[in-house]
Length: 266
Image 1 (tube, rainbow, N blue to C red):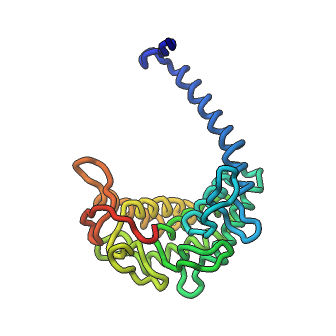
Image 2 (cartoon, rainbow, N blue to C red):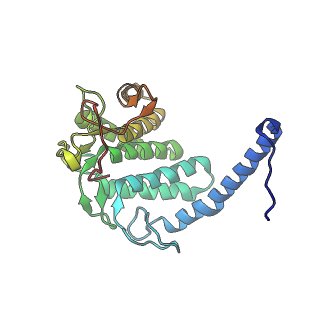
Image 3 (tube, helix red, strand yellow):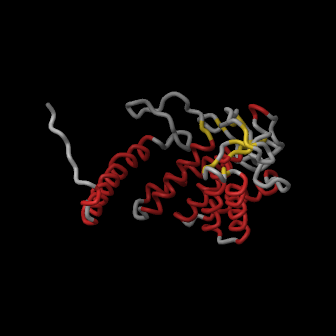
């Protein structure tokens, strides 16, 4: 019969015990990050032939499955390496990896006719889906602002600011508040239903809050701070169930709650 595992009641746990457990946990997490996660993505994530990043791998760490490139995953990789560049400034490989991702984004995802960023390209960068999804545009702002904060390369902030301005011009719902989320290449709002031109979501607006936070920190501009505060107010006032204290998921354009559905581009 297995021995019974016992542990001290919580009231017998001292602050020294907690501090030691936290130190051990931090050491374990740091080791896993520095000797597991980072080396894997630094070695396998970069697409040395075409630029940008691979994001799908088999259990041996080989690129597999979908080699198409999506705006939201490419920008998450840029954000990750940018954050690492800020955490470990002496390791230039992280800033170089982030710069590789930024270069691919500007060359292949940026729409040089209408502005903004395509949703999906083939591995080598040819556009597959030119739709403008605010969920993806927000990750561009987030990633490129972090990139400039970490590397001091002004290119990131330049394009983050351009993207922010396009959102204010084409996506801000000045009547109901918040932002239209699903649009086509020319910034016309998508059809209702599966294309979700008739919906707003907590998910997208939370990512806008995240993006505007980093943008305001990077630029120091009052307009970026003010729009951040507006998004926070929209989330608190229109997307939160006041009785239960939790966020709801999807809404009509004027913020009436709706049952959540799958959406074409997300």
